Amino acid sequence: MTRYKRQDPEITRRKFINAAVGTTAAVGGISFLSALGTANPVFRLTRDKMPPLKGDVLVHAGGDQEGTPVKVSELGEKLVRAWPQGKDEEGKPLIRKGDPNNILVLYRFPKGQIVAPTNLEATIDGETVAYSDVCTHAGCSVGDSDTGVGQMKCPCHSGQYDPKQGCKVIGGPPPRPLAQLPITLDGDNIVVKDFFLQMPYPYIHEAEWEEFKKTVEEQLA
Ligand code: FES
Image (cartoon, rainbow, N blue to C red; front, side, top):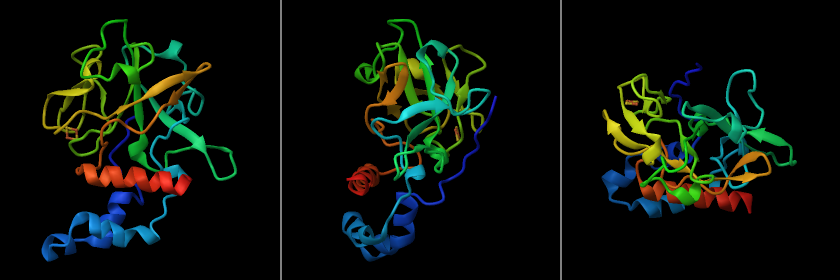
């Protein structure tokens, strides 16, 4: 199985903010949001580094089928990794793997097994669900657990998640669940309905994630 190691994106909103603001805000008492206002004019994110966006098609992230759309019929209780594929400025297909934190996992469970706190409206028929594959502890790629089918385990510090229950943490040090990605069907393709429902790694402040989403929307407008 392919293992994706932690690798921060070359440029992300957060890193940019950190670089631009540094410790000035903390030391000088400048508010975080006012600091963002200062940073806004020069920030630009390339499309391959944008997060999964509404309309993106989920494509295989490895194996013989790498780059081809994932089909629901290919999914089961073992994870399938995927990238979001959007479009570049000229409308050509573009896989958003410029940010390694965009790596995703998909599962399909029998009806009734996916329960709260999973957002069922964001699944396909309550059976197929997508999450970020980046551990919320320190950013390693999470795999299938070797102790329980349909559970996930992080190889770095043994964090465990339950993808049938919103990828809540069921063991180890991760501070919060893996972020759920809302998906739907477009013909045979699995497509993204909206941004992650929760802030994904590497965000630690909701305000940063909300500001990042706003910035992406503004750039696409
Ligand atoms: S990075 Fe996953 S448990 Fe530490």
